[in-house]
Image (cartoon, rainbow, N blue to C red):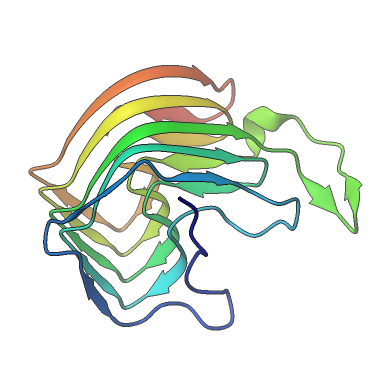
Length: 171
């Protein structure tokens, strides 16, 4: 089944969502070439995401941010969230409708729970899946975490990660 991502840069998701541990199984999402981040929640700010469980998902993105649950998260709490499946990113920088002169190794952010996390808290979150990406910051729980806390989280990552500039890791 397909879904429509939640939140925009101008109107991020700011509420609370509790999945109550129910599993959303077999989702597929492939980005359009509109430059919007790819995730269930594209943008969050001050949100609380609890017990969201996505299983056997397949997400493909050609844009800069790809997250299993959130793409760009600020001041967000992730509690008991889990993601299982495949994340594939092949980002290319696009400016004014034209591919920019850049190498992909300095561009993409990919994370099993969140691609980019700023001042976020992750507690008892799990990622079990495959990441195939070329980019800047890539990880099982989050691709990039700034002033964030990760506690009692785990990641099992079967990966094809290509990064020659920044960082890649399982958490």
